[in-house]
Image 1 (cartoon, rainbow, N blue to C red):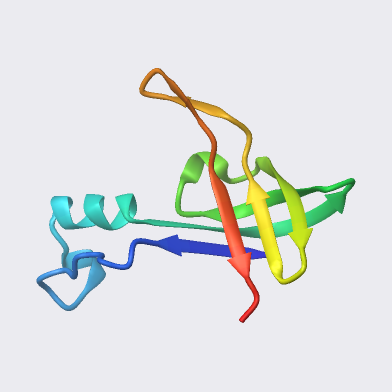
Image 2 (tube, rainbow, N blue to C red; image 1 turned 180 degrees about the horizontal axis):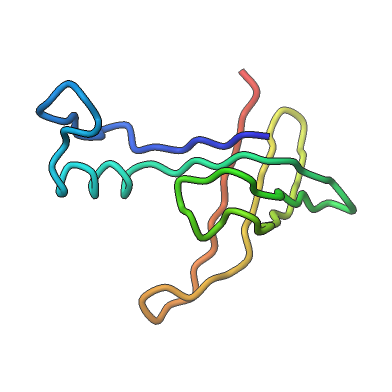
Amino acid sequence: MSVHLMNSDRARFNGIAQDEGTVQEKAEALNTYQGYAGTFEFVSGRVTHHITLSSFPNWVGTSIWRDVELDGDRLTLSAPYQESAGQQQKSVLVWQRA
C-alpha cells in the first residue's frame, strides 16, 4: 500500500532542483506533505499499515492502524486519538467513490 497526502497550495521552490532549495523551502515542503508505503493487513474492521518507507523517518519499521468503515460508496479511515498542543485530536479521512 502507498499513502500520499499533501496540501493543495504547496509553495514551489525558487530553483529547479530539489537539492538547491533553501532550508525554509525544504522545511515547508516537508510540513505540507506526508507519504509512506509498505504492506497492510485487514482484521475485524481495522487496517494495519506496516511501514517500510516514509517521509517521516521515525515511522520506518513501525506499524500504524486505522479503524475502517465502509458505507456504500464511502470509505472512512479513523486514526486513534492523539494529544496535540494539550488537546485530544482524532484524524478522520473519508473517501468517496467517484
